[in-house]
Image (cartoon, rainbow, N blue to C red; front, side, top):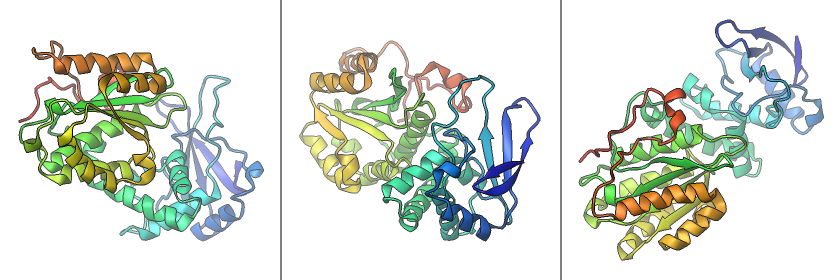
Amino acid sequence: MHGFFGLTCCCVRSGGADDSLEQIVVMEPDSQVVGKMDKMANDRERFTSSFSDRAFEEVMSEGSFRTFRRYLTATSGDDLTKCGPPSGAMALLLERTAMKLKRGQLSAWQQQWCTPEVLQLHLDARDGDVNKAAEILVEALRQRDDFQEVLSCARQPCWQGDARVLARGDDGHTCIYFCFKNQADRPTARESVETMAQVLEVAVQQLQGHATTFDIVCDVHGLKLSRNLDPRATLGFASLLKHAFRDRLRLGIIIDSGLLFGSLWRVFAPAMPAKTREKIVIASGPEALRKLSEVAGSAVAAAVEKQMLANRAAAPPAQPIRQPTELSEMEEDAFSAVRASSGKLER
């Protein structure tokens, strides 16, 4: 038995291959749980359990119980406390969020995403106001439901360009790259947004260490107005950054923008929060590479430079691209169902 937020919990070790998984079930009604957690929200010294940053997989189970999963490690000395335990504010946020959903509770898909990291991110975005945080969390969950098939990699999107995770810095932050030269001739808005949705999701999944954000490099070389007449694709991308991937952007770099890009920027910029817009810089190629090297490291900058040169060469790249990611561990992680792209874009 364990004490959790001052409640009585039973801890059951699961069987199977992963013997390091413990499931903690809080055996008190929802109203009592929320009341006690909320009361203790600011008394963090009384929280004795340790949770990893991917720990809150199952939070609002059926009936009046709450289920929490705690991942333990067999390696002694690993830091299991970097995220701290789920706070009373987080529990209350989940309660309020569930009340705003149509079914009155979170689905398994939604529960899996609501890690302590995600919950705290939404609380911080609204200065700790639980009701306001619940409003934006609901929007994010609804958007993720809308794109569940591609976010879960149940199916591959109809690629509308060369967007993919290109590299990862020594600090664990991933870098997404795409070039307008390789945009599909007749892109559709929905498929364009699905393309970016899966790439953004994989970028988050492939973060390492303490990294929680990614960088995006938008290479405007080869931009054609005829391929970008539908503003819904641009607005959809902005909406992903605003909701499902809120505060995940560390740095956005737009390379070699011209007069044509100005029309897209006038649609894209107002659709994003000011905080996100401030993270985006527009620069020439050399300036962009210097900035990227400062923020993400020289290895990431070198990978982007290599792609820039390939996209500006007369001959097509000799090596096909791999989507949604170029990182080698792709075939070993939870996204193994998504196969590497042949490099031929859908037209």
